[in-house]
Image 1 (cartoon, rainbow, N blue to C red):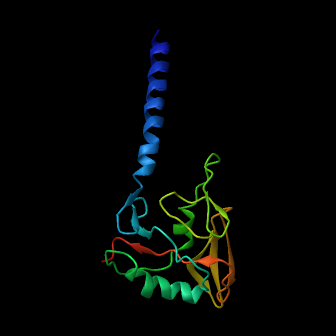
Image 2: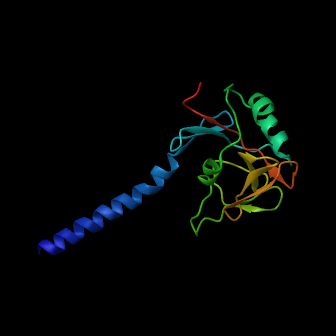
Length: 163
């Protein structure tokens, strides 16, 4: 009898935990209502959209620092290109998640709180004349010359611990 009660308690505990998992996942991102979302897991703030057009790495960096801050309602400073790890954290690996089709016709598997116009996003990580790009269609990264545009996008991010 004790075994049955113990098994029932385990099953109920697992069911309660699994029923609360989606709520916890949704709380990772909070829509700030001004074109940004706060990522509480990483302690950063993302733009809800990318720059909406093909850019090379230097154009992406300039857009993030000098243009993007004036496209949202509230003014924040320290906008930058994201690191590879930050971008990778937005990629959804779940098999059942379909993602969505971007304006450029590419399917992407990114968290629904962020809308991309195409699936390749520049990172801040560069070396000499190349920089890393993250692909939200298949979840991989590669490096390309910083002068290439090839449907690459800029997705601004900023750290919350900096003012």
